[in-house]
Amino acid sequence: MITITGRLIGMQKPLFEPWSIAIEPYLDGNDDWTLSELIEMVVLEAATILKTPPHDKAFLQSVNAQITIPAVSVSEDTQSEQAAMDSQIGEAIASALQAFEEDVYLVVLDNEDVMDLEDEIELKPDSQVTFVRLVPLGHFQLDSHHN
Figure: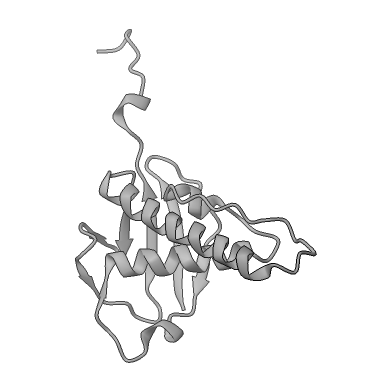
């Protein structure tokens, strides 16, 4: 199982509680992964976790992927609810990929920065994946009394 963690530059406290993903179902004999595929898998897994309380949206928020889980309904139209959820997950994946491209966060895989969505990566069953949320320089205020 790979471990997913998150942090904010300059902060000791993690962005969210670490969690794990069993990657075996995703492998299907394919060891060739790109960063883009890894992000897709993690967002998909996070969305699946959201369906079962208690859920934590912190990971999705850290990669700018927003998903609204509908309240449990007694509607018999579960097919349209599933289609809506699938659409939201697709949008969340696209948003997370765009956020990476816009330097909102970076990904560290087994202590190595992954710089491009198309970079090939090697996922191992014990891999550590860290999503590092970056802070725009404009958010820092300089104290005018210090030079």
